Image 1 (tube, rainbow, N blue to C red):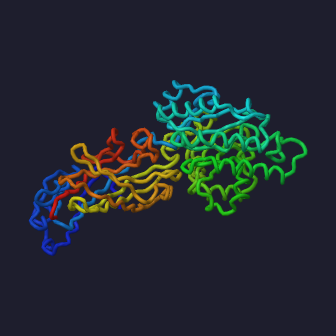
Image 2 (cartoon, rainbow, N blue to C red):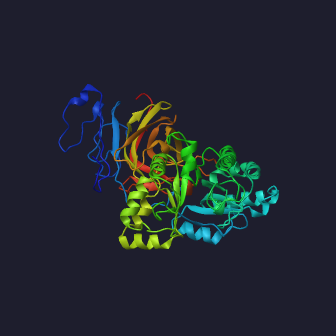
Length: 496
């Protein structure tokens, strides 16, 4: 059962020594196996006590005999969290290929956004290679975005109007190959790569170069020709996109045709730029089968975009967004359009809830580990946590254990990626982490973290995931290190 009160920590000792089978002494403190002293810490202090030289005790004290295990539970929080790669996004500028509005980015960061839409117009290169200067300046803008604590929702388009004057598929392929080094160099500044390039607004319809079929496309193109051209672009994008970055397409029909089994693609998702607008989301879905497919696909892969008012009726109620946000595993959404939805959600009392539930939301439930171990040995730390957000974590992040003493830190990461956690979970998942202990004796505080995986951002607290847990005594979020102090301690002593 999950804790519900302010008392966030209790200590359970599992003593393997037969001497500890005696009942605890008066006062509720467990016996100190092997002569260990009972602790006197107040409930919720986060301290844990052991035998001679062992960690101090909380919640009535704990034995520190060899073989003892300390465990702590944590209180969830409903506070809003500004976490990376999820939530609201704003626009970085009107055309990211020409400029970046740093003041706008900083204002969005202050409001809790961690995503910016970076729309790059390529109309000037429709019939020529992209210039080296353009590529260099684009890379510099992505670096600036990263320096200001943001990641990009990136899209390229030749015609960001309904006209759809894009480029031939082979030209797009060539441009994507040119862009590949920029994407690789700035993978740590990319949250989502929207497929773009084709047609009106880069949304894969209305192409004037035979890259789509039917609606507003150029005369004479056949369905087979359009599908082949789309495959050329798809394959170029898959080859150019860094493995850590979700690649999302606009047309669910394409995804259903390419990957009939929605569990097959590992990083390919959907963006819907008319979410909740009309019976088909303004032409996004041609059938209920496509809707069902996307619901399954996005259990593990990325889904987001924006609302619009093109088709009616608009599904603006809180019941609508609660149902479809959960069903489609909504991870991110444009906060600048369409305002009618946000007004309705605010009036209905669910706007803050939408902000909390978009993307992942990781709650720590419990931690347990041995109270004592010898220097240089391996300690297993078991962490129980759950993802209560609408969507999975994307990318390659892992859970990290930190052992901290006098400014010295030892770390180890889980073998399990956080993306393996089921979204909208109602029970905990246990992730074990084995950490080699320091060779210096002493008492080490145990902390948990979920840093970014990229070298330039892994030590930057702005890009770490903050857990949705309340501070309680020694259990507390540490902003500087972007880690959560569990309130437990492991005593590293020779001969134990």
